[in-house]
Image (cartoon, rainbow over all chains, first blue to last red; front, top):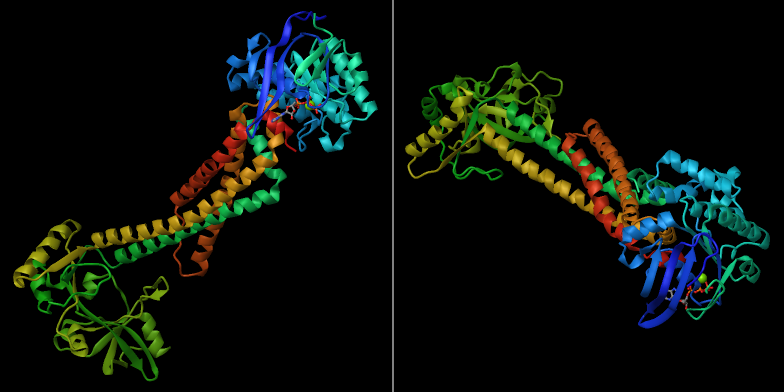
Length: 236
Length: 394
Ligand SMILES: Nc1ncnc2c1ncn2[C@@H]1O[C@H](COP(=O)(O)OP(=O)(O)OP(=O)(O)O)[C@@H](O)[C@H]1O
Ligand SMILES: [Mg+2]
């Protein structure tokens, strides 16, 4: 199907995936048969009008949700066959999420926010801190370790969130409108970090954005419309 | 996730909502404090009554006419004064049998008077019961035989009617009849705020005339040894039923009385604890309620934790620990207050509160249990939240 420019092994793969929501008897088809393959080290921008199913796809790729039909594989394992705990373990180790609204724990310092996935990964206290400090250093926040979210700018908060997504060394980083709440300058910083991480660490990045300038900078663009992929520049 | 992290997260959440946590705990605190305090009062009462029954003497058997039961007045009496001698021969020691016939009568000296229990007894009382005298002498065989109008006063009634005067040799009037004071008991103290030092003892013969009766309410027998008590108990009843064919008599031993009192007061303590337990339950409902609010408020946090790899049981554990922390901290504070209140009651009131260690362990165990029981529902709800839906929540 797709030929990734990077290492070539599929990090996540969806084959004819649908997702139907039932709201009080009314069925909403958020995804109506989507096939997409993200290879290791790829950098993909997902664009499309509001309500076209971009976030729904991200949730599926990140094991937060299961498809109504179709096949979904993460790191070669089929999601339908996994238990809830196995899905949680996959989310923990293979996927990193970055949300539009940062989603940091308000009462918790930057280091502890970043270390949180390691807590669920069963990593010891000392190692958690070391790795969290490393991740924060990688996003240029070595001087903000003890700060709480309220004491940081939006751009800094999103960088903390990126560090948190990164700390478990995932294969895929799923960023749903990561710059949506940021001004253009901090948005630019965040994008630069994502691009650098993708280049340096070979972590695949899937990025949902409404900003065409940002989308154009990605090697591959996937256009969504009405729950279907309209165009995929990476598809063969 | 390890227990320690779940504990840390739960503790942080409680600390972030200090006031709310504290208010939620109040219900549990009140429940636990009242359990501990009421049980302390109950067991204190039991201890005190038991001490008093034991303090009466040793190896005692009480013989009453009819079926023996606590709380009911003796049935139409068929015990007579000559049964003292009769049972004395059964025991093999006439001095081991004390007789009583009692009535509440007015005791008066000049203008001072009070209604007290007047007991008609015989000269054997000091040999059967442990009841030392402070002054003078007790009733003698001669006093009883000649129906002499002499009296031995409890220490408190002596003070009430005579003030600072020495009562020995002075006259008192009992139900309008004059008696001469020949002795004063040593103080016994009070039980539950009721003084035990207001009794007046007069010769049983004089009492019978005074009350207008020829019955004896009860006979108290002191068995020669501990081992002979049970055997003697049966023989006394048999002897009386032989003497009065067709009539019924009962004998209870000190041990049986202690057992009955123990059962009654134990039950009372349990009932008190159960009533207090209800408030603990109400406290538990409050915890459940606040935990549901907490789960709702932190829906996004739960969604995030799940997105980062938390399993259902990790979330469940975190919220369950939060609920158990609430109730167990509340429980500890409640225990502190309960013990404190019991000690205060002991020091400043006549309530003989005795803190029972089992009630502390129980109260703490129950508060932990309440936390688990009332925390499980909100915690499960948290654990089951759909992460996608949770993350969208505002
Ligand atoms: N939990 C849900 N229950 C019901 N319908 C839902 C749910 N989540 C999404 N939908 C519907 O599915 C469709 C796709 O939603 P989705 O969030 O994927 O869109 P999107 O492309 O991310 O839009 P946006 O750019 O506004 O974020 C929409 O019509 C939405 O209303
Ligand atoms: Mg979206």
